[in-house]
Length: 413
Ligand code: C5P
Figure (cartoon, helix red, strand yellow):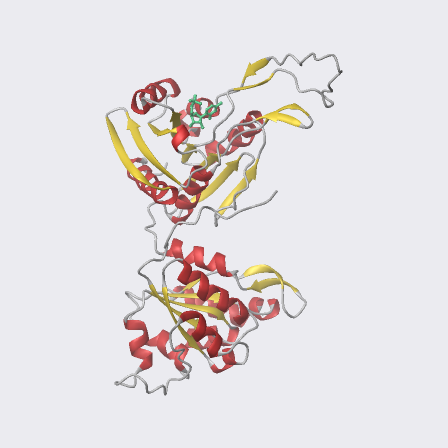
């Protein structure tokens, strides 16, 4: 299945100034794309490179991509005060070193400051300029006790390590140590800046349509794009939650940090959700589950017989996944959020659904005005109040919904 990224939301890093540090490693080639990606999201990017990094990619490339003079030496005297190591981080919202080599991590762990990049990391105002590292090295170097010791020390010092991932390495070996891809690092940085409303909590989300087979090649589905549910999974992961996303057939990229389980029919979705529900504290049912399915699934393709007769399809009702979860015994029941896609009278219908499904929160929206679109408007309907979330892109709304859920969620059991 073709996958496309979530709808581009303008400027997820708008207004942020990032110092992008490069230490030596083949993964420097990914730093060029990363610089572009960060700027695409609205950040301004100041590149700082070690001597070793300059062996892998030129400052000219990074300068052309960022439109800012690259700093490669602590003896760079362009600023009147001749203190690049101080100036660079005083205006930055974060320092991201990608790639971070084994040697660079060792220097940082020891507090060494022998060249511009380690020097500015040491000299940065730690309270307001966090340091994030994207390690990139051979798997033996990464797993070496010295590197692991340094990584643990860096974490203890408040440094955030992004990755590394496992996979093919430039040296031909396969294992842990690959730098995350540019888009992954960009998503990590976006998430880093989000408030951690759901740190340590767990969220189960259903998303997309279901597909109810008629025969091996045909079926019945609907126009749900899955975008709202995927945005909620992303927002919950950004907020620090452990997220499981049960997705019907959609062509969307899995939000970073979410565990995705693909299903087809409503019954498959129910089978996936039921054992997972007691393992999560929140259940957000955004899926547009088909209300009915063909009573019989033909074993073979139903053929035209030339007589003009059409097959008579009979339907049976699908299980209601949300209502089933909402009826679990209290000790196994997550805090349930339902969705109501209506074509009119959103509040009245959502309020009726609140009662019928027995859930504490139903999110109403106008179905035809949201299916497939990148924006939406939501109405949070609860027993004692109604809250409007005005039209915005789906990620913004999802973040607001996640914040609202976090406010209402009972303390961990
Ligand atoms: O009953 P209705 O489809 O209008 O309710 C919508 C809400 O119930 C959504 O949260 C949807 O995900 C959920 N639902 C479900 N299983 C169904 C039908 C709806 O979980 N079979």
